[in-house]
Amino acid sequence: MKRYTYTLITEETNLGNLIEEAIKTNQREDSIAAEADDSDIDYGEEDVIKEIESTLHDEDFSEYSEFLDNEALTDEQLLNFLAEEHS
Figure: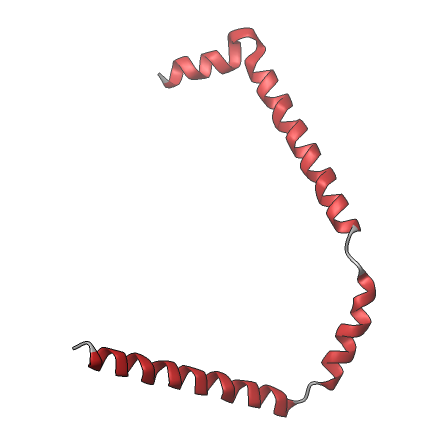
């Protein structure tokens, strides 16, 4: 079956060339679409991002880390409570 499929694609009615051309066409269309997507990006927001980054301090990161730890602890406590309740 593999040999038949290979022969069909490579020798019969130039099917291999048609498939190869279709793949190349799809790749060209994909690259054109990707370039169009890149042109939609507004790089003017970089200044806003830099401004926000300059306002963040180590305390902000530590507060956020504590918040995440508290959330994890609360989740764990709730799961334990539910496990005990249904046991």
